[in-house]
Length: 461
Image 1 (cartoon, helix red, strand yellow):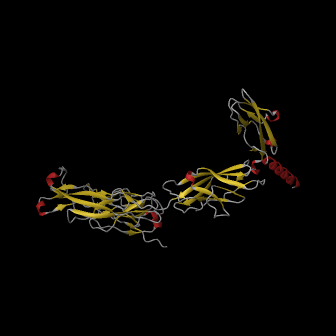
Image 2 (cartoon, rainbow, N blue to C red):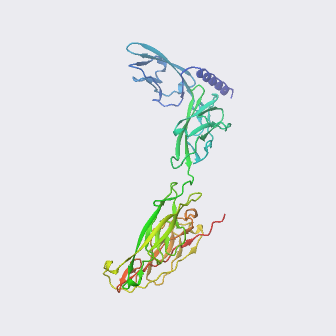
Image 3 (cartoon, one colour):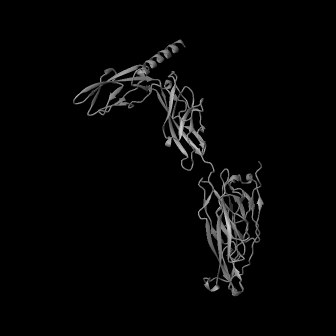
C-alpha cells in the first residue's frame, strides 16, 4: 500500500510539472502505432527528429507529421522533450515538444463509454433541462477544476451548459466546475423542424493539456400541438341515380352503400387521422379509418350538404375545423345507361341490420384469434370483407379474427372497429356488390352485414 502511495505522489508531481510546461501533449499509454501526435506545417520546410533515443517510438514524415511507431508502455509516466529541427532553403529553427505518456485510466475521461441519451419536450420554455444521466469528467489524478463546452452539433446555439449546483446561471456556453454539468435549452424547440441533436461535450483541464469528449444524443419529444387539416376546405361530389320508365313521376333509384367520395386530412405531428360526421345523417356515413363517404339512405332532394371532421390520436387529441361536403344527385335516363348483356336472374332486395357487439381490449390480445362468427341465412353463402381493415379479417365461412393486436388508444374517437362485409350466394353465383339487370329494372343489392360492429366500453380510469 505504501508503494502505491509513493507512486501516486510521484505521478502527481510529474503531472504538475508537465502542466506548467508550455505546449504539453498528453498521450495514453495504450495508443496504437500510427497515432498522429502533431502536424508541422511550414513553407518548403524539412523536419528532422534530433533525439535518437526516441526514434524507436516516434517518426517524422516528409510532410511534417509526427506520429507514433511503437508501444509507448516503456515511456509511461516519463516527461519527454522531443527536439525537432525545421530547415528551409533560407533558414533553420528548432522546436521542442513536451510529451507525457499516462495510463489512460488515470487521464481525464467520462464514465459513460457510449453516447449519453437525453430528451426534452418540444415547446419547453428557455432554461428547461435536458433529461439525461449526470455529465462529469473524472481522473484518478487530481487535475483541478474542469472546463466543459459543446464543440459539435449545437445548431443555432439552441443548447448551453450549466453547473448543476447553480441552476440560475443558464446563459453561458461553457462552464468551469468540480461538479456535474447539465444541458439546458436556450429556446423552445420544434420536433417537426428537428427532433434529434447529436452533441459532443468536451472536458478540458485549465491548462488545456488533458481533454475528453462525450457524445450526447438529445431527442426532442413530440407534443401534439397541431390539429389535422383537410386537403380541401370544400368538397364537391356527384352521385348518379337511374330513372325508371315513369321518370316523369319523379321516381329514381340510387345505389345504396355505394361510394360518394373520399375526404382526406393530414396531421403535421404525424399522428394517425380518423374521420367523423359533425352531425349524424340518415343520408350518408363515413368510414373513420379512410374518410370514405358511403350513401346510406335515399336523398330527398337534388342536393345535400354535410360537414366532416378529422381527429388525431395524439395526446391530447385534437380535431380539425369542419370541411364542407356538397353532394349533387344526378338522375340519368335509362337510355343513357350502357347495355348489360347478362342472363336474367331473380334478385331479391335485402339489407341485413347492423350488428353491434361489445368487446374489451383484452379480447384482441392474440393475433389470429377468432372473436365471433357472422350468421348465414343459407349454407351456400360466403363472406368477404369489403375494404382492408387493420384490426380484423373475415374468413369466407364468416369467422371474424384478430388481424393486429387491438390498441384502445389507436381506435379513434368512437372507440369502434367498423367494417363492411359482402355476401355472395354460391347457389345462383350472384355477387351482391354488383348491380344486376333483370327484366329491364336495376336492382341494387348490397348486403350490409356489419357497420360500427365492434364497440369498446370506456376504459376505467
